[in-house]
Length: 106
Image 1 (spheres, rainbow, N blue to C red):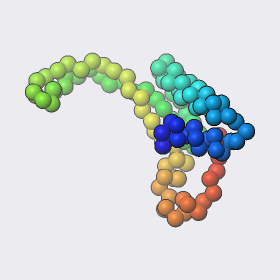
Image 2 (image 1 turned 135 degrees about the horizontal axis):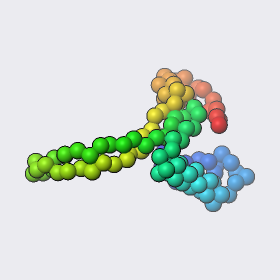
Image 3 (image 1 turned 45 degrees about the vertical axis):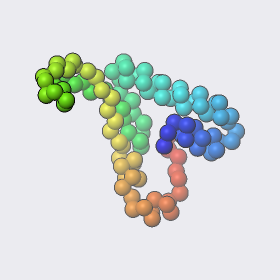
């Protein structure tokens, strides 16, 4: 699902909100997650998962084309760990997943 598809789904499920309002809400949520991660904070969405930042040490890599050794600087990378409820819903048998009503969790 893309960001625009998410906005379209939320707009359809919430007809009392304008498309522009839903777009602003989604953009604000993504922005707040991004800002928190850039500060090195952990973002947890219960039932969904947690976003964290992991550090990768500097190392010597290889240029795949030439095989030449290349220094790679230390960097921070975003990491997502799925929550228990998300893992369980993804691993449900397909028939049960269709039959189960969608449940909003917060």
